[in-house]
Amino acid sequence: MTRMVALGSLLFAAAAIATPARAEVRLPAIFSDHMVLQEGRKVPFWGTAAAGEKVTVSVANSRGEATADKDGHWRIDLPAIEGSGPHQVTIKGGNTITLSDVLVGEVWVASGQSNMEFALAS
Image (cartoon, rainbow, N blue to C red; front, side, top):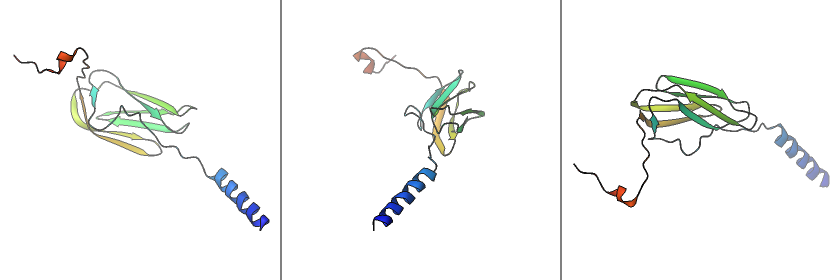
């Protein structure tokens, strides 16, 4: 019985070592469906993947590729895109991520006081 347990443990360990680690291409939460990309400027995309994995990003007529570094980080700066949309963004590596309903246009970030919640009227 002890030999069977030892043999089973040995086979399990060998299978665990022989099975390649599988890492998926992942994006931070800032990238999602329905987002707006800034027009007229380089468009950065970044994320993680398996070390050495080739990653491609395509949107509209732009496409870029990068290879994940030893820590699994990658970044692609697409050339500026004119305002348009909606588009589909495709990120490919070992897996494929598709972001839909992505627009390219002016992105404005506003912050201020509590009176910003009121609508402006002319």
